[in-house]
Length: 419
Image (cartoon, rainbow, N blue to C red):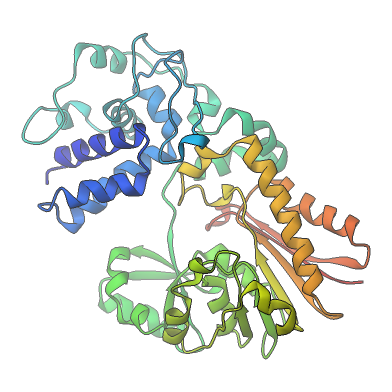
């Protein structure tokens, strides 16, 4: 496919998303209907679509979408979560479309729009007079639109991030870096780097964690690598690895990963010599964990909720709780636009409930490790302060907050101990 044809495919996919289709479903449908597209084509179309999803507001504004246009369904979320977005004022009559969004994307990146919208082959039709009129005007973009920040959440983010607000929001507009975790129980990082280099994959050490490698070239070759197949590496964000590194005394410790999800942290804990047990409120999320654990050369028994009272005592209970995910909006950009005040309040309540649940499972010497991938204090430090106020028999321990400006996703972790 030509670069123009890839843009047209992204336009058509975005139109499906605007119509309410989840992003992944729309991309899968396009790929299945476009058997002629190679892996490079599919990757390029996906990149275009996700670039727009990360920068939805600014792409719309640069593409000429009027501020007083009809409310817009947010991309790729359930109908009950649909919200409106606002953009800066532009020439009247603009309507949201995949074409306008891609124009806005190209305008921000400085690409030659005329060369790409040339009406040739399977590419986009040539620019209309109205579109040329939009492109001829110097854009007047409001600061929050330029940062692709939801208006309602901006005051909270400003208060919680302080001087980091603008740099963090800017970082969330770009693609997330690719990281792998080296299973140092089975391989040395230097040996893994050398092997990957022979396969055209360039990976560099990262300061966030001694087990983290930043893949700077050839990331799409990782899926076919022997190191991934035999459990010497796992895909895991560097900040996610860093919060595990903070947990001391893991060798031989009995550890419960209470909100295990796919099991990335459970495997990282096991690689440090812990005896790890995994639990999740939705056991289906852990479906791949036994196979991944076997590849990594560890055993991670899965516990049901009914099993938990008899499975202890645990030395450490880790809870990577459900959260707004604001620290990982680069990876899941639709979550930024789907979040509402009501959903945030619901998440805060869920987090408090989980903290109380794991405290009830704790023995006299158990450490609780609370983890989120959010930037919001109401889900982080405020949540721990509220737990300690409810539970005077506990005392605070080590905490750490990471933002995308540190290189990985945004994460928060706090440990609490029996007083």
